[in-house]
Length: 287
Ligand SMILES: [Zn+2]
Image (cartoon, rainbow, N blue to C red; front, side, top):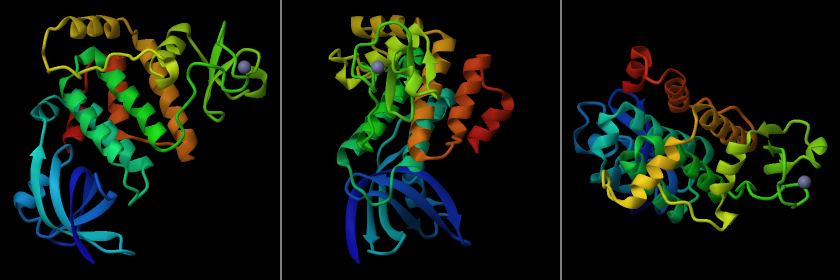
């Protein structure tokens, strides 16, 4: 048993017995771990507050080989984004990144680069212009797939390697976009609109064009880049947003081998359809 220290982002928590809480965290040095915060149920105290979801904390815990649960000894908040608590929509985007990490990442497989990406994404969810929040989440989903070793091909046909002219589809099983000539081999592929195919290609790391990162500048700044970005992402229609969101989730589910019923994504899909959260889902989300 070793007493270790790491930066950590809390993904979710559940009660353990009368007084304790289990907090599932993604730590920079030890990957995903389950930490037990004793006494957190009775008022919480500093341990409980530091291990709230969406906070970045410095934690000290007892790492035991062969045991699922590790006891927390100390936890201090290092970074938090009040915007995520104030705005239920931003909270849902940030929540989706935490839910996806919890659902797809294996325990105790450290990846410090992925930790940094998750932290950066929470900052973007707090600061990006509202019309860029989808792009923030899609970029995260693509980076998560890369971190897990299955980055999709978005620029050339995944079957023949040829350029994409004409009709483009997405073959989740095959791991990317597919041209019309190869479509017969993949009857389950999802046809993409021109706009969705272009948008996906623009987000590919292999596209050779670096898309500006939403929210990477100072929050609320009115620099030229930020304004241009807002205008660009404002142009993405609701139908294309749905299409890209469903395509990427279908791809992640194909690799997970199961349907991922994420609360935050259901909430976001509803906002896209109705333009606003319903009172009921807002309550659910507060819980
Ligand atoms: Zn092809």
